[in-house]
Image (cartoon, rainbow, N blue to C red):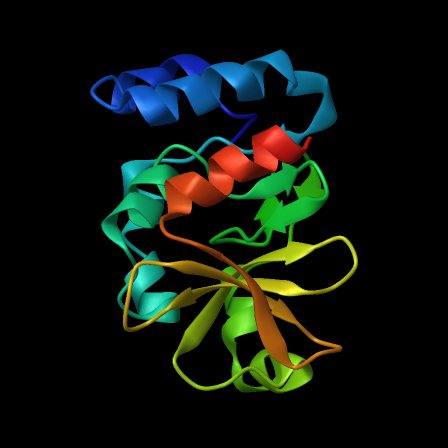
Length: 158
């Protein structure tokens, strides 16, 4: 699949200044993350794996099939990139029964990313918001209104 394609991502989000700015800032931090390229075909598999996902998450996955985003691992649709020769954590791996039991998440959430210290970032199946589950507290500690807000916050924090 290869590394994240900034030109393709910018083209996909040309009508969304907020995401374009985030993509521009990601490019400035290029040496600090390892995001993967994606395709429209891969994004269609998301609903098969985690159920109904917000449209903006699916749109992002059509240009970025996971990878390392600073201290967060964005989960991939597949677990290996043969072109790069790298293995990645996958949506299936964390959203099967044993993966969900590991975090003791309440029902109705799907894991889409993992912080470096092990806490999962989730999508609610009832709204489009993104949640950080604190495993030690057994509660959600951060909530972003949209997936794009989560991405922008990751770049801001970096």
